[in-house]
Every structure is written in structure tokens, then in C-alpha cells.
Amino acid sequence: MNYDKLLVDYKIRKVEPKEFDLSLAERDLESAKHSFDSEDFDWALSIAYNAALQAGRAVMFHLGYKPSSGEPHRAVFEFLKAAGFDPEQIDYFDRIRKTRHTAIYDAIDAVSRDAASEVLAEANIFVLKIRTFVQEIRTDKSVSPPAEFKNKKPEERR
Image (cartoon, rainbow, N blue to C red; front, side, top):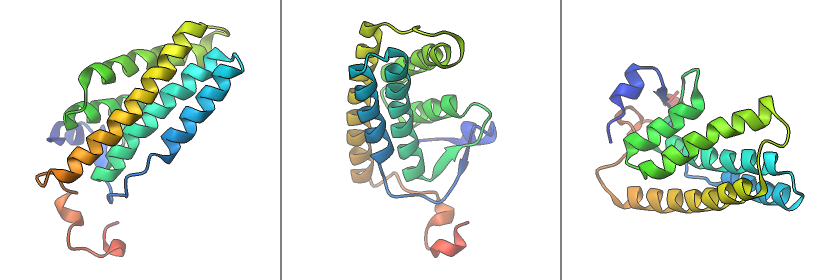
């Protein structure tokens, strides 16, 4: 996994690695389902997308990185590609990012029931794949936190 280009382009920056935590993604999946059940399809799609975004951020934080660009959503998905995550899933959610933008900022009732249902299902799959991806990273001894964080006390890592 090589993140040099993303670092040089200031799309990401190094931070102290954190424990892997999908709680925000799981919360968003529940909220998206609730919005879908309430027939608020714009929000269901938006929150399902956010679940995927939060899952991607969880990977970044776990590996010791965070977005630093003016386009943090894109930075997360570019990071996932560089990390070797499923490019088709990443491209799918990058397209959904644009639909989400329309639903949040430009139009009411921009999302159909079918579209919201599809994105909710894909977000569930995405989060499961992220969980598996991190388990694979944990078993791969060649992947580790940035060198500057090794052998340092937490207060020295800032």
C-alpha cells in the first residue's frame, strides 16, 4: 500500500492510528433504514452513503491517516483504492456521492424508492467488505502503522 501520491498532493495526512471502529457506519446504516421505512428516500440514500464514507474513514484512521484536502469524501475513496479495496464498490459510491449532493442541496424527492433501496443494500455490503478488508490487513504483517508512530508513547505521537 503506497499512499505517497496522496500525501504529496495533500489529500491525506498522517495521524496517530486508532482502533478500528465501525460504530458510526453501523449507526448510519440503522438511520438509513429508518429513513427508508419512513419513505424519506432522499435521506435514506444520503445516510446510506454516509455509512460507506464512515466505514472508509474508519480504515483510514486505523492505518494512521485522515483526509486533509478540500474534498475529504473523494480523499477517502482515493485512499481506499490505494489501499487495494474493491475499486468497483469505490466507484459506485463515488457516483452515489454526486446523487447525494443533489438530494441534499438541490432538489426535493430526487431519489426514488428503488434507488434508495439499492444504495442501502450496497452500503450494507460495503461495510461488511470493509470489516473483512481490515481483518485481512490485520493478518498481513507487511501492513503496519506509519513508522513515526512505532515505539513512541501516545503523548509523543502528536
